[in-house]
Length: 472
Image (cartoon, rainbow, N blue to C red; front, side, top):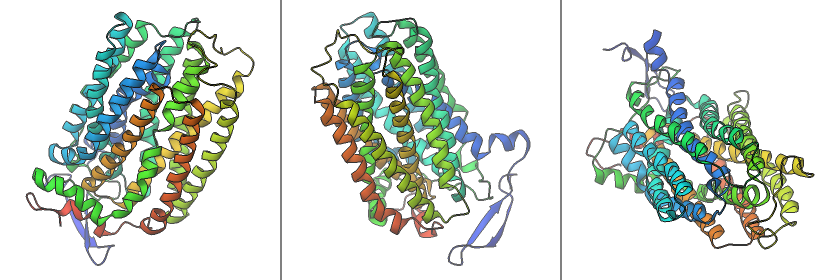
């Protein structure tokens, strides 16, 4: 046996089965095959690609004066994202997560490059929209592979920490992007960004595409408790498509998380386009964008620590996380409601003089944006943690992640399209509020029934299917 494969059998902790414990490699090899190292590398992929995409979107309108093209591109992006992500779990299990990540990351540089193109040639809006549609297919692959790896590498008691660390690194990409934009636009009173911002984003995104090449195969990773990460044995495509049905049949409670999935990206349209872009000039938007993503790091790490508190049972932690989310949803949206009453689409024409960082009232508005970032990070981290509490099997988690990104993206496609057709700002805010509350309501039975203090072996059924066997 190799150094990684040396192990012994101990008494099983689940229904009399046995669990094999493996010796973890040491030295530089041990550092490379360390589960946290691999999650950090995973975070860097998302730092360079979707992190910079978030920085671009966070500027409102992709940094453009007219946000219509950006809204239509996002609508196309999330429509293809929703369709592709539903089957991305099957593709991930067939191709393996490293290749899936590589294919998925490639679309981000194309999308960022399209905004550079429209800044140089204003009449290539169709290219931006087409790039958005291509990115949607790529993003479905990237996020499904990411969800499967991030949730399968940690032990059950470390999932909150691993999710928090990943989310912090991922959001550093948006922070770097926002910092670049703020530095380049701090002395600008204009409402759009220059070519230099897009060129910087594009260069970093191209670096991100290469990182999956250097990541380890999941089958070689041994967790901190000595258990090995199980990997799907690349069954046939027929088996993989049937696996979607098997996942829903064996774990139907995941359907109750679909409203929570739907709400997860719905709020971005109001936050980015109808608050940040509508009210502020480019200097203020860039600063808002920076503190928003900084708040995301604080939010993800904080909720991750709460959800991993070993002095409380996992069920108690799940309900505590739910309560924190419910409080945050109502605090943020009541606060936003009072600001939203003060302006409409009609009251803010495109040539309106927008709020600057030195204007009266800016302090309260940037604080609301900070709380929006906190809420989003807590929500996203809690959703991943809930899925991770339902299974440790990478194959099953790939399906869960695919469902999550598919439903999430369907919602985002709808809300970006609603923005493109000029739906009233207040309607957008109220729909965001209602969906958040509904998502939490439907999640309660899942927490009550499916979150246990230890994941049963029966939840790992998909990992044990044969190479060409249909899932049983």
